[in-house]
Length: 370
Image 1 (cartoon, rainbow, N blue to C red):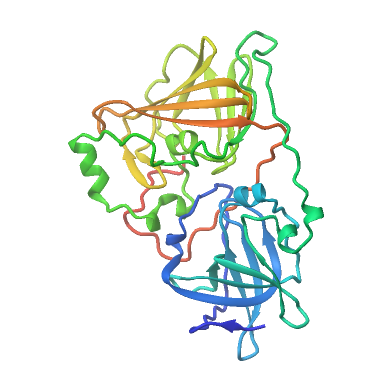
Image 2 (image 1 turned 60 degrees about the horizontal axis):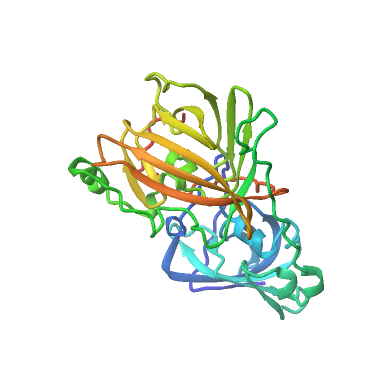
């Protein structure tokens, strides 16, 4: 095994810190766009996680020493849709990976190209792709027979008569990944908002979620492309999110929460309006609305309207319309919409966030850990 690279990076100690909060990292935060490495090594660990699949390889250097490299892939949710799972790679498998080099020289590489090798002679057995079932790539098409997706249709109402939203939803291909999406309306900033939007030049490299900070409610609820679980009770509703690992408990009531301690997910109140579930949230920290920036002030009020429909191709679907009211930054309310399908048996993929091994830039701010 060897490193085919212009540079060999050696680290005496490489520690990966983790937290239960999921950060949907931009690859630009960790990797260069114009420098690449190719590594060959034996798999020591395969972490099928969000926000990124991580593969650890023991790679032999030219001097005989061994460096444990980390291969960083995209979110496990996408890999799973293609047929990958926790056991798709095993300890002792031999891989060759080519990808972008890191900004800080640490032994990490992005998963741009990946090949399964024969450990005895290094011959290429197959090219592996996160978008294709690895059994198909390895020529085991029978083992990768596609599972028939059973459509999920929910009862229209709960036994107590309220509209039924209880269940797990997941992304529908073709209905928008997350955001801000190109099809979303532009943020209607006023002069103050425009100043806030450009006061710190936005860069995906300095996304607060790259450093494992909690997201704001618009980013978590309005934009997440991943699964969520809604549960309804007589006096409250809970929502759990696969992305970032957040959980909200929202009690029913007729009045907005009183001004209080601000937090990333704020204080919310829920109500039913006909067949809709409506959630209003206040007491929010100033925060970014999505992974491409677009800040909102601490006077933001967010209204989420949940509507369910029956779709012949997707079963029961959930439409979430999120409207942002920000009298400090916006000239008018701003609304985005996302659609997901109820999916019986959908299991969340475990979250594991690792901040980059570099100093936190001064313009990457969060006020609290609430």
